[in-house]
Every structure is written in structure tokens, then in C-alpha cells.
Amino acid sequence: MTHHREWTWKRGGVVQVTVDRPVAVVTLFLLQVFTVGAGAGVVKITPERELSPQPAAVAHRQIVVPGENTQGTASGPIPAQATLTAKLNGLGTAKVTGVVLDAATGRTLYDRGSGTPAVPASTTKIITSTAAMAALGSDARLTTKVVRKGNRIVLVGGGDPTLTSKAVPTGYPRPASLADLAKKTAAALKTAGLKSVPVDYDTSVFQGSRLGPGWKPNYVPEGSVAPVAGLMADNGRVTPNPCEGTVEASPDGPTAAATAFGKWLKRYGVTPVKGRAASGSGGTPLADVQSPPVSALVEHVMQCSDNDVAEALARHVAIKKGLPPTFEGGAQAVRQVLQSLGVAEGVATVDGSGLSPRNRITPLGLARVVALDAAGKRPELRTVISGMPVAGFSGTLTERFTGTTGAGVVRAKTGTLSKVATLAGIITDRDGRLLTFAFMDNDAVDLGASRLILDGLASSVVSCGC
Image (cartoon, rainbow, N blue to C red; front, side):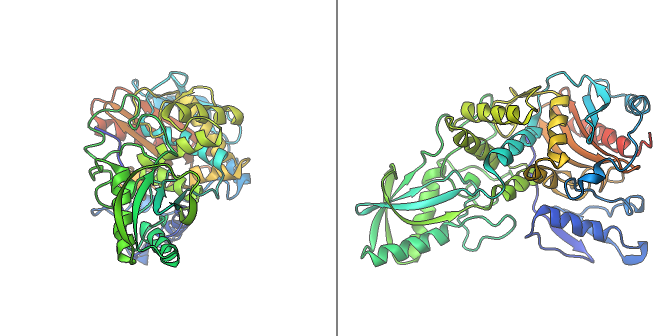
């Protein structure tokens, strides 16, 4: 089984919401909904299918977004290590390694093999996203452009897999559009008196292998990821569906993007002629479009567990650090950023998405990175936390934690590969103390059962009262 992607959200019942604002805003909305009185009516939040309403027991819980009030990270007493350890060990989870840290002090409150490297699966995206926010900054955008070279034009990829071929981009974050780029390009060409041009394309922003180290051959055909390319549209899929992970990848993402661009160019009055791979270097700029800011891309990665965007961000970190925009360069650059942040210990990655079983991260290393993101000392890193799914309500946790004390309280990133289940994030315990955690099962013969165990561990921390 491969990594899961987020479903498109749908709202049912009394309240309906269009998700076109940042995840943090949605979280605040959910907070308002679930703090109303018991007689206010039933609220149902569904991904693609119906979910049961959450039990009244979680209605009063507050969802805490660290960084909004950093003084609140130590608002309650620190749980007693011995009590918490006894409670978690009593759940019979000997094969699960993990750690719980106090977010404010970094103190270890629970430790079961926390220094043992494990396959992290998609919790790797916490690492990639942290490095991207630190290296690139919240407001950076990825630019796709068109340049003119003689009587030819070149579509120059900017390493933005969210670029869409749809006529009207929708959703959050709202992507850059090939239609918009074609409209601007056609206007410039008409001004220059050109009504027919060959459309070449440039993918050189990324280099090296297009498939990650150790990736299984079924990842691409089943739609978990597309071959990494500096130019692609719709996450490199045959149809626009950027957050579903079940749509087949295009055989040739760059050519498909250029073809889609050409169709829009024709609609705006310029006849495209099939071109070839070419360099856009030295060309005269005609038009460009920009991706959403990196902060929005990171929120999207965390919510959807988008493998394509995660790999693109790792390569952009490499570019920023002056390293080759390859899998190897991305991994090296991410490590350099973590070293500068003081949280590189226990982290060794080979890709940005976590699809590779060759990645190794210790639970302690992962929980320390989450603690850094939550601390508020580096405000731009808070996006990694605000982007994490909320247990029982959003993203890859929509259908998990149902009926538990963790629902609405735990924010976490999931990870799933064959025989691997992981979970890492933040918890506000019942005394108001902010904790970070990482639980990892690398012997998950029954993935469903393993996820229940991980959810149970996190929920037990919430309700400990230690």
C-alpha cells in the first residue's frame, strides 16, 4: 500500500463551507462550530463520503494553534513522566517506537526506542516543509514563464506542479493557470504580429532522476506520484485532480503541459505549432504566472500529503542553497537547513515526500522538529503546524480518531507505506499543556489496526491528566 492523499472536502448537514481560505481559518471556524451549545444542531463534515457526527464529549475541546499565543504553550502543568509512561506502555504497543516531548521545555515525557531510526513514510513531509519554510520564506512563489526566441516561444517550467490546465482555477490554494499564461502570451504575440508559433518547452529548473531512490514501480501508475519534472500541469496527472492520489500520471508531464498550453493559446487567437524540448535561456520575456506562496503550498502538502509538491519544494530548497536540483541535492539541502536550525540529529532523508523506504528518522528527531515548528521563535515555521490535519475533521485525519478524546485536539501528519504507519504532531492535554509527539510502527502487518494503535496512543496523551 502506498501513501494516502487528502480527499476534497465537502460539508453536509446544517453548515456548508467552501474551502478557499487558509487551513488556519478553517480551523478557527471549526472551533466556533464545535463550541456552540448541544442544542445548536448537527454538524457533519465529510471528505468524499459521510462521517458520523462527533460525540458530545469532544464538543468543548479547544483546538490550539501554536504561535497564535506562544505564552500558552506552557499554560498547564507538565505531565508526570512515570504516569504517562505507565499509561502508554499499558496499551500493549511493544512494536511501536515513540516519544512525547513537552513543547516549551523539550523535556522527554515518554520514550520507547525514541533514538531508533525508522522508516518515516509521509511524516517526512514535516521535515521537507520545515526546511522549505526556513529556506524559501513564507512569501516566495514559483514562476512559470514564456519567453520568445526568434519566431519561436519557450514555455519555461518553474517547478510548480500545482500549475493547472483548468479554465477557472478553484480551491485553496488557488493555483497558477495555463489559461491565464496563454492569454497574456497571445496578447504579446499579437502585438508583435505573430499569429502562429512553435511552442517549445524548458524543464531544466529540475535535474537528475525523475523517480526517487527506492520508489516502488507501482507508485506512478496508481497515481501516488508523477515523475518529477520542472514543468508539469495538474500535478502531472492525466486529468486535473490535484489532491486525490488516484489519478494516473501522464506518460510525459512536460509534453502534456506544453500541449495544454498550446490549446489555450489557440483559443486566444494564436495557432501553436508542436515544438520540442529547448532552453529558454536568453529569451525575451513575454508573460508569466506565479504559484501560491510557499506558505500556502506547505499547508497544502500537510493537508493533502501531496507527494508531487513535496518533491518540488525539496528541489527548490536545493536551488536556494546552491546545490543541484536533484533528489540527492534536495536531501543534502534539507539537511543543511536542519543543521542551521539545530534539529538535524536523527534525520536522514533521500526524498522529499517520504515515499522512499530508504528514509530514516528517529521518533525523537521528528518530535524535535515539530517542537521547533510549534515554539514560535521562527514565526514562518508555524505554517507547518497550522497546515497539519485536525484529528477527526480534516485532511488525512478526516476519518480517524472518531469517537476518541483526540478528535478535534490532535494535529498531526500521517505516514503510510507497506508495513509502515507513522503519526507525528502536537497535542494539547486536558490540563492545557502543549506536547509534541512521534509514534512509528515499522512492522504494521495490518495497517488499519496499526493506525488505531497510533491514534489510541495520541488520544491517551490527551486524556492522561498526569
